[in-house]
Length: 247
Image (cartoon, rainbow, N blue to C red; front, side, top):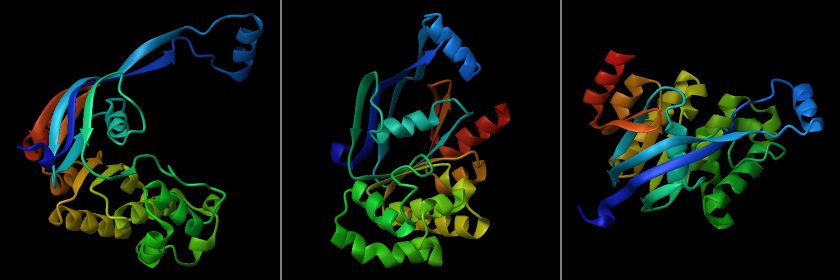
Protein backbone atom coordinates (compact mmCIF):
# COMPACT_ATOMS: atom_id res chain seq x y z
CA UNK A 1 0.00 0.00 0.00
CA UNK A 2 1.35 3.51 -0.83
CA UNK A 3 2.89 5.52 2.00
CA UNK A 4 0.22 8.21 1.56
CA UNK A 5 -2.43 5.68 2.69
CA UNK A 6 -0.54 4.82 5.88
CA UNK A 7 -1.64 6.88 8.90
CA UNK A 8 0.81 5.43 11.44
CA UNK A 9 3.86 3.22 11.00
CA UNK A 10 6.19 2.01 13.74
CA UNK A 11 9.42 0.17 13.02
CA UNK A 12 11.28 -1.55 15.90
CA UNK A 13 10.24 1.13 18.42
CA UNK A 14 11.37 0.90 22.05
CA UNK A 15 10.81 3.25 24.99
CA UNK A 16 13.02 3.22 28.09
CA UNK A 17 12.20 4.91 31.41
CA UNK A 18 14.51 5.43 34.38
CA UNK A 19 13.09 4.54 37.77
CA UNK A 20 14.48 4.45 41.29
CA UNK A 21 15.47 0.94 42.36
CA UNK A 22 14.64 1.73 46.00
CA UNK A 23 12.00 4.37 46.56
CA UNK A 24 11.78 6.06 50.02
CA UNK A 25 8.43 5.21 51.59
CA UNK A 26 7.93 8.62 53.24
CA UNK A 27 9.15 12.21 52.94
CA UNK A 28 10.96 11.77 56.28
CA UNK A 29 12.83 8.75 54.93
CA UNK A 30 13.76 10.72 51.78
CA UNK A 31 15.17 13.61 53.90
CA UNK A 32 17.18 11.18 56.06
CA UNK A 33 18.66 9.64 52.90
CA UNK A 34 19.46 13.14 51.64
CA UNK A 35 21.20 14.17 54.90
CA UNK A 36 23.25 10.97 54.95
CA UNK A 37 24.28 11.56 51.36
CA UNK A 38 22.80 8.29 50.26
CA UNK A 39 22.49 8.24 46.48
CA UNK A 40 19.37 7.10 44.70
CA UNK A 41 20.18 4.17 42.45
CA UNK A 42 18.30 4.13 39.17
CA UNK A 43 17.60 1.32 36.75
CA UNK A 44 16.30 1.30 33.20
CA UNK A 45 12.81 -0.02 32.54
CA UNK A 46 11.87 -0.89 28.96
CA UNK A 47 8.22 0.15 28.66
CA UNK A 48 7.98 -0.80 24.98
CA UNK A 49 10.15 -3.38 23.26
CA UNK A 50 10.69 -3.44 19.49
CA UNK A 51 7.16 -2.58 18.32
CA UNK A 52 6.50 -2.81 14.58
CA UNK A 53 3.10 -2.32 12.93
CA UNK A 54 1.19 -0.23 10.37
CA UNK A 55 -2.24 1.39 10.60
CA UNK A 56 -3.93 2.63 7.45
CA UNK A 57 -6.05 5.70 6.86
CA UNK A 58 -9.60 5.32 8.17
CA UNK A 59 -8.89 2.31 10.38
CA UNK A 60 -9.82 2.19 14.07
CA UNK A 61 -7.33 0.36 16.28
CA UNK A 62 -8.23 -0.99 19.70
CA UNK A 63 -5.25 -1.33 22.05
CA UNK A 64 -5.68 -3.89 24.84
CA UNK A 65 -3.58 -5.32 27.65
CA UNK A 66 -3.29 -5.30 31.43
CA UNK A 67 -2.27 -2.22 33.42
CA UNK A 68 1.44 -1.59 32.89
CA UNK A 69 1.50 -3.34 29.50
CA UNK A 70 2.61 -0.12 27.76
CA UNK A 71 -0.70 1.04 26.23
CA UNK A 72 -0.50 4.68 27.35
CA UNK A 73 3.21 4.83 26.49
CA UNK A 74 2.40 3.69 22.96
CA UNK A 75 -0.18 6.45 22.58
CA UNK A 76 2.26 9.04 23.91
CA UNK A 77 4.99 8.24 21.39
CA UNK A 78 2.48 8.34 18.52
CA UNK A 79 1.20 11.71 19.82
CA UNK A 80 4.84 12.88 20.09
CA UNK A 81 4.51 13.53 23.82
CA UNK A 82 7.61 11.39 24.41
CA UNK A 83 10.41 10.16 22.15
CA UNK A 84 11.39 6.54 21.64
CA UNK A 85 14.80 5.28 22.74
CA UNK A 86 15.14 3.63 19.34
CA UNK A 87 13.16 2.90 16.20
CA UNK A 88 11.27 4.99 13.65
CA UNK A 89 7.75 6.47 13.81
CA UNK A 90 5.80 7.80 10.82
CA UNK A 91 2.59 9.74 11.46
CA UNK A 92 0.59 11.15 8.55
CA UNK A 93 -1.81 13.92 9.58
CA UNK A 94 -2.89 16.15 12.46
CA UNK A 95 -3.43 14.37 15.78
CA UNK A 96 -5.98 15.17 18.50
CA UNK A 97 -4.86 13.25 21.59
CA UNK A 98 -7.12 12.50 24.56
CA UNK A 99 -4.44 10.75 26.58
CA UNK A 100 -4.60 12.03 30.15
CA UNK A 101 -7.56 13.73 31.76
CA UNK A 102 -6.97 17.48 31.79
CA UNK A 103 -3.93 17.48 29.50
CA UNK A 104 -3.72 20.82 27.71
CA UNK A 105 -6.03 22.49 30.23
CA UNK A 106 -5.35 25.13 32.86
CA UNK A 107 -7.44 24.40 36.00
CA UNK A 108 -7.52 28.09 36.97
CA UNK A 109 -9.19 29.09 33.69
CA UNK A 110 -12.87 28.68 32.87
CA UNK A 111 -14.18 25.96 30.58
CA UNK A 112 -14.68 28.58 27.85
CA UNK A 113 -11.12 29.86 28.20
CA UNK A 114 -9.81 26.30 28.14
CA UNK A 115 -11.59 25.67 24.84
CA UNK A 116 -9.45 28.40 23.27
CA UNK A 117 -6.30 27.20 25.05
CA UNK A 118 -6.72 23.52 24.17
CA UNK A 119 -7.84 24.06 20.59
CA UNK A 120 -4.96 26.48 19.97
CA UNK A 121 -2.53 23.79 21.17
CA UNK A 122 -4.07 21.55 18.51
CA UNK A 123 -3.12 24.16 15.92
CA UNK A 124 -6.34 26.10 15.41
CA UNK A 125 -6.63 29.88 15.04
CA UNK A 126 -8.93 32.07 17.15
CA UNK A 127 -11.17 32.57 14.14
CA UNK A 128 -11.51 28.81 13.64
CA UNK A 129 -12.23 28.26 17.33
CA UNK A 130 -14.82 31.08 17.30
CA UNK A 131 -16.66 29.25 14.52
CA UNK A 132 -16.68 25.96 16.46
CA UNK A 133 -17.15 27.32 19.99
CA UNK A 134 -20.96 26.90 20.24
CA UNK A 135 -20.87 23.36 18.85
CA UNK A 136 -18.17 22.40 21.38
CA UNK A 137 -20.20 23.80 24.29
CA UNK A 138 -23.45 22.24 23.07
CA UNK A 139 -21.92 18.78 22.66
CA UNK A 140 -20.24 18.93 26.09
CA UNK A 141 -23.61 19.73 27.74
CA UNK A 142 -21.80 21.84 30.33
CA UNK A 143 -24.29 24.71 30.04
CA UNK A 144 -23.65 27.51 32.54
CA UNK A 145 -20.64 25.62 33.95
CA UNK A 146 -18.70 26.61 30.82
CA UNK A 147 -17.95 29.94 32.54
CA UNK A 148 -16.79 28.29 35.77
CA UNK A 149 -13.12 27.43 36.46
CA UNK A 150 -11.99 23.86 35.85
CA UNK A 151 -11.19 23.55 39.57
CA UNK A 152 -14.95 23.23 40.10
CA UNK A 153 -15.33 20.47 37.47
CA UNK A 154 -15.69 16.76 38.15
CA UNK A 155 -13.53 14.31 36.20
CA UNK A 156 -16.56 13.50 34.04
CA UNK A 157 -17.07 17.17 33.16
CA UNK A 158 -13.40 17.53 32.18
CA UNK A 159 -13.69 14.41 30.02
CA UNK A 160 -16.76 15.86 28.30
CA UNK A 161 -14.94 19.10 27.53
CA UNK A 162 -11.80 17.35 26.29
CA UNK A 163 -13.71 14.98 24.02
CA UNK A 164 -15.90 17.78 22.66
CA UNK A 165 -12.87 19.90 21.71
CA UNK A 166 -10.80 17.06 20.24
CA UNK A 167 -13.61 15.76 18.06
CA UNK A 168 -14.96 19.14 16.94
CA UNK A 169 -11.59 20.35 15.61
CA UNK A 170 -11.80 17.51 13.05
CA UNK A 171 -8.41 15.76 13.31
CA UNK A 172 -6.89 13.31 10.84
CA UNK A 173 -6.03 10.99 13.74
CA UNK A 174 -7.93 10.77 17.04
CA UNK A 175 -6.32 9.12 20.08
CA UNK A 176 -8.47 8.16 23.08
CA UNK A 177 -7.07 6.64 26.27
CA UNK A 178 -9.84 5.46 28.63
CA UNK A 179 -11.20 9.03 28.80
CA UNK A 180 -14.75 7.89 28.12
CA UNK A 181 -14.72 5.59 31.14
CA UNK A 182 -15.46 8.52 33.47
CA UNK A 183 -18.55 9.76 31.63
CA UNK A 184 -22.18 8.81 32.26
CA UNK A 185 -24.01 6.37 29.96
CA UNK A 186 -25.89 9.10 28.09
CA UNK A 187 -22.71 10.99 27.19
CA UNK A 188 -20.83 7.77 26.44
CA UNK A 189 -23.52 6.89 23.89
CA UNK A 190 -23.07 10.30 22.26
CA UNK A 191 -19.31 9.72 22.10
CA UNK A 192 -19.74 6.26 20.59
CA UNK A 193 -22.07 7.71 17.94
CA UNK A 194 -19.55 10.43 17.09
CA UNK A 195 -16.73 7.87 16.86
CA UNK A 196 -18.86 5.78 14.46
CA UNK A 197 -19.48 8.91 12.39
CA UNK A 198 -15.73 9.54 12.29
CA UNK A 199 -15.24 5.97 11.04
CA UNK A 200 -17.66 6.64 8.18
CA UNK A 201 -15.72 9.79 7.28
CA UNK A 202 -12.40 7.94 7.15
CA UNK A 203 -10.71 9.39 10.25
CA UNK A 204 -8.04 7.15 11.77
CA UNK A 205 -8.55 6.36 15.46
CA UNK A 206 -6.68 4.64 18.29
CA UNK A 207 -8.69 3.59 21.32
CA UNK A 208 -7.43 2.18 24.62
CA UNK A 209 -10.19 0.55 26.64
CA UNK A 210 -10.71 -2.25 29.17
CA UNK A 211 -14.25 -2.65 27.80
CA UNK A 212 -13.89 -5.52 25.32
CA UNK A 213 -17.43 -5.03 23.98
CA UNK A 214 -16.49 -1.44 23.11
CA UNK A 215 -13.33 -2.65 21.36
CA UNK A 216 -15.31 -5.22 19.36
CA UNK A 217 -18.01 -2.70 18.47
CA UNK A 218 -15.78 0.18 17.37
CA UNK A 219 -12.46 -1.25 16.16
CA UNK A 220 -11.38 -2.73 12.82
CA UNK A 221 -8.13 -4.04 14.28
CA UNK A 222 -6.80 -4.85 17.74
CA UNK A 223 -3.28 -4.68 19.18
CA UNK A 224 -2.54 -6.74 22.28
CA UNK A 225 0.37 -5.51 24.39
CA UNK A 226 1.95 -7.68 27.07
CA UNK A 227 4.85 -6.42 29.21
CA UNK A 228 5.75 -3.85 26.56
CA UNK A 229 5.81 -6.36 23.71
CA UNK A 230 3.47 -6.92 20.79
CA UNK A 231 1.59 -10.12 21.61
CA UNK A 232 -0.91 -10.05 18.73
CA UNK A 233 -2.01 -7.62 16.01
CA UNK A 234 -4.83 -8.00 13.51
CA UNK A 235 -8.48 -9.07 13.48
CA UNK A 236 -10.35 -7.60 16.45
CA UNK A 237 -12.74 -10.47 17.14
CA UNK A 238 -10.00 -13.09 17.07
CA UNK A 239 -7.58 -11.15 19.31
CA UNK A 240 -10.19 -10.07 21.87
CA UNK A 241 -11.49 -13.64 22.17
CA UNK A 242 -7.98 -14.98 22.76
CA UNK A 243 -7.27 -12.19 25.27
CA UNK A 244 -10.45 -12.97 27.19
CA UNK A 245 -9.71 -16.70 27.19
CA UNK A 246 -6.37 -16.05 28.90
CA UNK A 247 -7.51 -13.44 31.41
